[in-house]
Amino acid sequence: MKETRKGMLLVISGPSGAGKGTLVARLLDHDPTFAFSVSVTTRGRRENEIEDVHYHFISDEEYDKLLEEDAFLEHASVHGHRYGTLKSEVYDRMERGQNVLLDIDPQGARAVMEKDPDCVSVFVLPPSYHELKVRLHSRNTEKEEEIQRRLHNARGEIAQMGRYRYLIVNDQIELAYEQLAAIVRAEKQNTVRYFPEIGE
Ligand code: 5GP
Image (cartoon, rainbow, N blue to C red; front, top):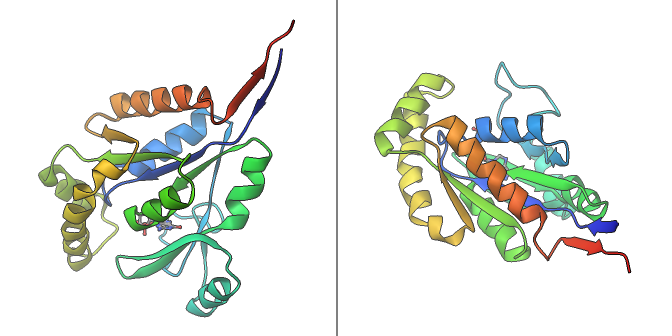
């Protein structure tokens, strides 16, 4: 049997600390049909981050130049830093039938959902605001002021969860990952991207 597939654009979003990163890493580990879209950011690199793997870390001037060149599929200021998804990370791959994964903030997710209604949007929720606070403190990557800012932003982001096609509450990572894998499995068979040609 011959079959053709169009690439899936999977947009994973959610408040900072909901555990998107773990879900994204697992999916990339388990499913070789997905490529991660490496964003650009003007924020500084954290110790555990690898240039061009987690982000392309760039200066404000370089970011302005990309804006001028219309290089972004979407871009946003998040928690005081600038982030953007490069068109070059997304379109060519999708045309070749590859699935592309975006881990972006809710402003960016909204822009992508408007541009591409066939994208598969998934919002990841923490089980409670209390747990979100605990997670933000325990990962030890932000200062207190920054944590407070992220917690404040989370309320507004969660209020918009109805815009997404799917919701996952990340209480237990095993269950949350199983739910993400089920979404992906079903969406691979969606008629917008799956074109089997059966024999006579
Ligand atoms: P962090 O600085 O903790 O890596 O990311 C902060 C937030 O920025 C996260 O919600 C992350 O998903 C989001 N983010 C990362 N890359 C992009 C991007 O290219 N565009 C948008 N809109 N948000 C992004």
